[in-house]
Amino acid sequence: MTGTTALNQTHFLLLTNNSHQSFELSKSFNEKGWLCLLKRCNNMEEFKQVHAYFLKCGIFFDSFCGSNLVATCALTKWGSMDYACSIFTQIEEPCSFDYNTMIRGNVNNMKLDEALLLYVEMLERGIEPDKFTYPFVLKACSLLGALKEGVQIHGHVLKTGLEGDLFVENSLINMYGKCGAIKDACDVFDKMGERSVASWSAIIGAHVCVEMWHECLVLLGDMMSSEGRCRPEESTLVSVLSACTHLGSYNLGRFIHGNLLRNISELNVVVKTSLIDMYVKCGCLEKGLHVFRNMPEKNRYSYTVMISGLAVHGHGKEALEVFSEMVEQGLEPDDVVYVGVLSACSHAGLVDEGLQCFKRMQFEHKIKPTIQHYGCMVDLMGRSGMLKEAYELIKSMPIKPNDVVWRSLLSACKVHLNLEIGQIAADNLFMLNPNNPGDYLVLANMYAKVQKWDEVAKIRRKMADKHLVQTPGFSLVEAKRKVYKFVSLDKSSPQWNIVYDMIHQMEWQLKFEGYVADTSQVLLDVDEEEKRERLKCHSQKLAIAFALIHTSEGCPLRITRNLRMCSDCHTYTKYISMIYNREITIRDRHRFHHFKNGTCTCKDYW
DNA sequence: TTAGGGTTAG
Image (cartoon, rainbow, N blue to C red):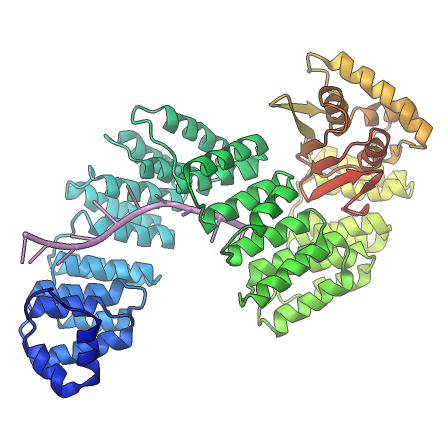
């Protein structure tokens, strides 16, 4: 028997089950026959057995076969890097192929330092890296975030004249992107002679890494209109979906979903997870749930986006059900999933459940709480008025509390009117972050609520001394396939007079239903009438009026805000949802509010 | 006659 002919499972069984027969049989194999058999192994045990026979026979193997042994161990799913290494070290004169294999194997197994050391060793032994070496080495740099080493290796690429290789160039873009060096990534991309879909995906991915969301969308357009007319692939669209998610571009996200469905028969788990995240964060929980429920394969990422999604929409009970399903499926929860779980409890006011989950995380799943977990717990306790307990928790934390934690406590104190703890929270907050105008305003709001105008004035003076100006709030609303932006007291819309007429009309209806403007939200030293005038022109109200005019009856409204909502806008929107019989979804910096029939899913705490 | 490369999610 020679070569690769007629090698099958029967031969393998002969080899492993009957040592005498198999030894006889093995003598009739040449090295390629062995090789073929080795490649057919199903696990490391089988491989080791065959390899032992291989040594026992003492047949001479050329370097090609030796390299293949290393490759099989290093690169197959069932392989072992340790075993690969032991064979590799026995090769007297390893070639670049051997080094490439070992580097790649180490990168795949996240042994990144090891991969870079092998590259150095290769150079020291005078073995010339080739066009296959660099993609692996650069990937190690990108995963390590090792820009300095990446730049050095880029130098080697130039020296060896491999900069024109498409794969090497794409790897360079990826390395620079992952290391946050977007300019260098663009430089490589701009200088490329030829670009593949992967080049475009890499440059879009690089912009995702540095959170340049708008540029991602522009690049997608460039890609599709470029000379090569590259068509985006799944990986490209996953990056673009991430940009849509952050920008709240529901329409583009939905368009991409349609595009994916038309062009790809079965979307993979990564794409579906990105779709869920996009729908949920763009306010469409139902669509996200639909994708999630129809997934044949779910992993920890898919569960995390769904749980966190349900959390920001205030569906705490459902989030806990999905979490139980995840554990039942045998997926081990990690710290990120627990951030979703705890924030679900916090957003839905599930205090007991939250406290229980916090314990379970530490004692059953052995996860040390991070600052985010503490943040959720402070929020959860604060929401239910457990202000002392929340403060005690902060004091007992083994890690230094950050501004998010103190801000949660301050907000809770504002709602429950605990001036003493509120002031402590504010003092700590200002020590960590003295220049955030929003924090001063929350504190001022707290004092305004109890009519302590002296304190309010003091805080405003402090703000003025520090030249802190309130971040201008804006609201975005989609109508007629366009996004419109409104700022407070906005008169920039070509139809502003119609909008203000609508505001006026709404005012009468609101008064009739019992709405009273909460002028304590206006911290300016102006009379009540002026305060009411300012209140009714908050950007959110203008956006609602505009949307009511431009959408048909019963059509849900979707609004995105850059800041948290003021409590007057919240009350106002509850009334509007009832009077005009509209579902209104508002995404603010913190969560989603769904207004329907005069109530909000946040249960008036945010 | 001879192997091997880049991009994606919380």
